[in-house]
Image (tube, rainbow, N blue to C red):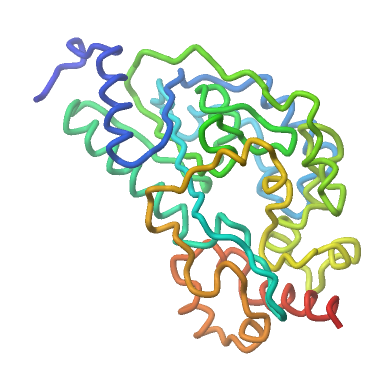
Length: 320
């Protein structure tokens, strides 16, 4: 059914969008006004000024754009924020000559999965309201995903700087749909339930969580094994990998809120062969062609072939 712009009921449309988001497979959804993130921008500027972004130079480009959705989609009036549980009931095994892979990269690339669901949601909104225009954002666009998730009431920012939800812990992917329509907005946010717990800070082998809610990427195993493009890993990282080949989940594994995890209903997040523990010798034997085939539609291609081989060598050298 087509509606004119004047006939749209913001409350009813918001309810219908949330119901449709659940049909699309999202586990949580919140809707907030598209407006600048003033306080969050100040925290980002402080983080950048400390040099904590390391070699992620794109974080330093126009940080004001990251805090204002209108810079990404000029007609944005609403931000629909979604969360998708990616926990699967599998666990790392202590196998020789293998390296552990971060849980988020076990299955298909989340950019593709979340993006497809959000595009499906946008198509439905357009079919309901032909005047609707939107922009799908899944990590690649300069949105402050975690800040929007907190604003939309999906969870709170943990001391490890991951968003924690009461229902799924921190095992969630976040995405946004910027929309040119006014909707009824969620006002309630979830209080910080970390309390006095400091397990994530104490468990980090490289002391990357320099203080609660603040991570120095240059000390982080995930940053080093995924984003860093140096031929060799920094010595402080290399000697403290604790078996991690791609990414690191230590701060999430020790979080008490992740005791309540439930398996995802999204089958595309089930582990691909060799993506829970990677065979280090197989990685070192990869050619550009076999690498492209092995990691097609996988988030692990982010580290590039050179990075994966560097990480494999580092783990093998630390075991010798």
